[in-house]
Image (cartoon, rainbow, N blue to C red; front, top):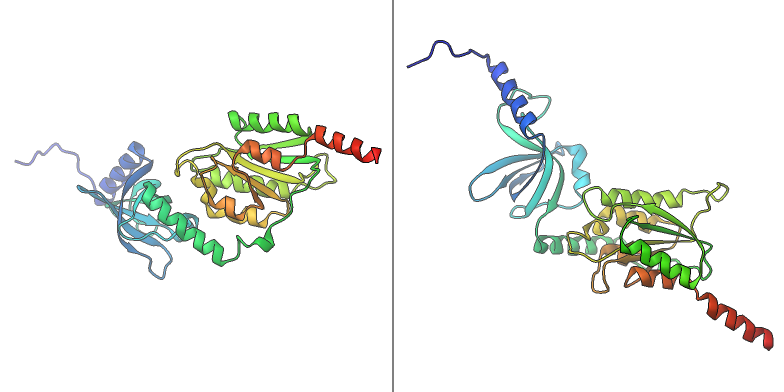
Length: 289
């Protein structure tokens, strides 16, 4: 039996109401699932389904965001998509009442997927010559100023500063960054570029060497140091860079592109400074001759 007192909507009204309710309830979301039905037509946009055993959600990556993904997704890959949950495919078709995630970020999920992606990127960068030895810069023996890119809190920065003070006190410039999370790679890349843009005629002197450091962690934790923007900014740096990411057994792509890899952050401090006491002893011996 039809109820006569139910509010009547136009198609546009009910569609807009659903859209507003959906966006107000969820807005920006992170969704994990398996990619299927991947398509990238001549428009440059990317379309796919994100599914699990019980449901499917449509995913869309607009052309302007495709380059930010940094790898080639494929059917069967488990991934985490971050973006806006909404209805309609675009401003051109705002009234469509099917819903989709407009994806800003897409990352592989799980260690197996990440390891496969890591190998793919490693081969790509190696083929471009980014890891070649003839691009490596020498680490200065007497750095006046050392730039450090790491978290401003925690054991890593304390260990580096303590070791520098023990060996050869010098000027230190800290560029604080998050060392994991969605924003980390962009901020680390910007820090490398920022140090390179310091002019020596300014009140702050450009560093003679840069240490990029963080402590150990899972492959997911260390992933920002495998991102393309970080690798390319390190390669482009005019200032020598020492990577000190994770423990000795951890390897990230920044280790291959940097000018020198240190097994630990403390070791990085040792690799770019002499021991003041030993220098004094050597100088005394030289003067006796």
